[in-house]
View 1 (cartoon, each protein chain N blue to C red):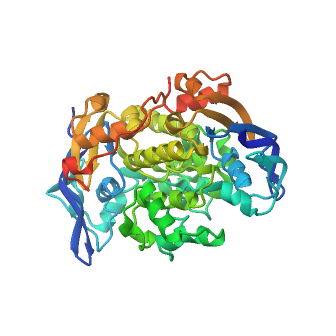
View 2 (view 1 turned 135 degrees about the vertical axis):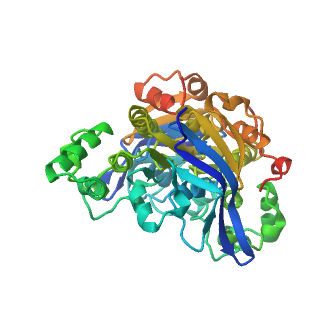
View 3 (view 1 turned 30 degrees about the vertical axis):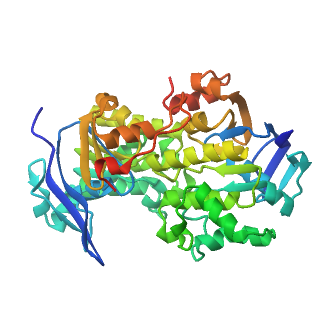
Length: 244
Length: 278
């Protein structure tokens, strides 16, 4: 079964059409990347799947079932998102405990105390961080909290929007390792948006190159490692990332 | 090599906190000729503070001390604010990270670039305009006539950064400090902007200090590299020998970066205890 299926997806913000006829099929358990320059529409695709960009036409299917345009509690449980900037995506006046418990309360999960404790352990945060505020944490620790928050509802799909581009290289390595391990342990499907090709090479199996709201090329990671792209634009991105 | 352009000895920068003064740069020394020097480090390593202190841009209560800080024979520490203004821009200039916040939003691009010339050189209006247009051409902007009449919000990030480079290079400084000049830009635009800087530096025979967190980028565009960690230089090497770096911090940084042809199952994580750093 495919985890995410997009068919002829056109997304608009008001009058402006952002993407044009995006079609993708991502299998369950797969790790897929959308790459491209700023303004190529890659983040917008993610936002539409998450329900944050409701003006679209076409079809979005999650785990075999189509999603509507509104907020859908069942879809929220299946599919969660991690944002780029850990400084902006966590509520500054809530403790880590409150941030992680909130989705559980909304969706009526029991055992909240144990679930929070367990999740902190899973993302490699010491339990002493549980009752702290975001400003008392470093960028890497905050991104761990953001990942923990996304995983609280035990989703099967994780949408990742540039999850490491605001972090230092050494911290990036820790977060990338964490994501890889969590995916293996929980059999998650990843849809990752990034402009960093080496990150794709580490974390993903396939990628789609986007430009001006269209998919230019879908390739697998072996092609990426060798730079064996069919389209000149993909090769351009490859050389700009230091590939030869 | 001719006499060095810039000499720094035991540079220290400190800021007061509730627990006394904290040093963010802890005694670094280097000399720079007309060459390309890269300063690499993670957030909080003091690399930007080093760049800013050369231009004396650190305001009170921050404090800069050094045993020696000379630029082309001039003692920078002894310069008054007024004398510094004649050096800043004209002899040493700095390209900042984000063009969105560093350009004046209510002034056209052409006027902003010309402002630097008006301040540092006596030229007629016509000569000034010609210089601005040829500078815009040098940073590879098509149709400079049209672009010079635009406001910053009407240009893209990559173009904004090229405009800033044009502005910084038009008074023909001897030293350019580029503090993360491309980290707000896309990869594809990044190399274009760096190629332009590189080209201009070579043809004009200037010195360059390239401050960045990106080891690969720095090694591609510099001759020599300083690696900084918590306010100290932990490693100094030729850019071509970066792969043979010996300090555990540098080695750790290199290993932690994913590669285009990545095959490792897990990325090695810095063991911060091994060199007693942060």
